[in-house]
Image 1: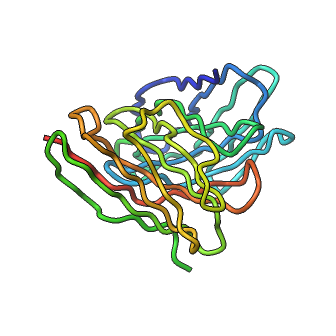
Image 2 (image 1 turned 120 degrees about the vertical axis):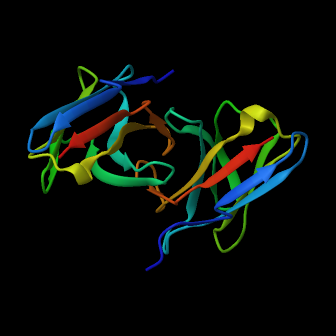
Length: 112
Length: 113
């Protein structure tokens, strides 16, 4: 059974810092990995999608890497802003279908 | 282009009652998945519908059932509600095929009292 773990559970940083969020998964037989952002009480917004054959994806100040063999992904956020405050979730898609298995998220607070 | 829509936004029900939640997928998408997200936790997969059939199911009891209509919209039904069913219910849609990026709706907040 696939299990996804995110570390840390919560993170508080001053504005302008570069930061790294970690995600690990137990079964390396994944098809892709997605990073999502969730604002309190809201739905999920997809940030980055990495196919299993890729090593990283970039969008603006966000960069996500994937090391499938070691079961790890990182989300790097450059020059953090208060508007980045949210919960960040990673999820993997299994090769047998498109169901997503999620971690429990990292709650990020960026202080002005 | 409308994204994934869900209704209602919020719902309050009493233990033992039944509830129906609705989802319309993003244009061009034909696969709909439902997730339950308890407070402070990651979403848990309930089931997925494709071509009006349940294609995959997570570890949820038979009280949770669904339906997909010919226009690809979907309903989630929960019978005999328990206090523990209180959660944010998320619908996601994707294009045909496996491993395609999923787009989520805003969710329905269900409170069972």
